[in-house]
Amino acid sequence: MEMVFNETTTLGVRYREESRKILERSEITIDDSRVKLARRPSGLTAKAEMEDLSPLNSFSKREESRKYLETQVLRDYGTNRD
Image (cartoon, rainbow, N blue to C red; front, side, top):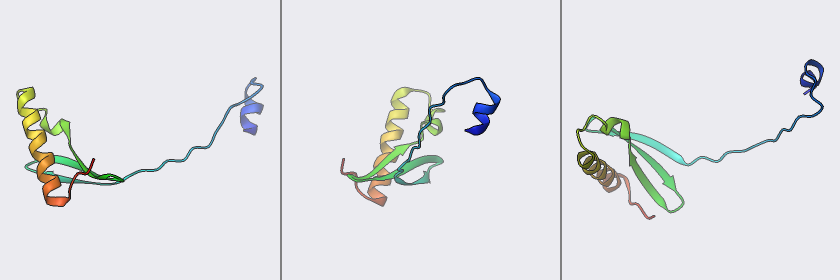
């Protein structure tokens, strides 16, 4: 802070400290598509990486693939309780 006051014309500076909590998470690959797993207080969740599904030609194909991947991962690694 001393440098800010010495090197600028400011009369005051606001600052704060922050903390962060993150969920336990991991990533798995199925059929060349990444799926992110997160352990939430309510249970395990799986989210397909949309970037990996973007080559599919239509929204309906991407949705079908996303649902399949997320369901498969939850079946293999745990259940989704949210």
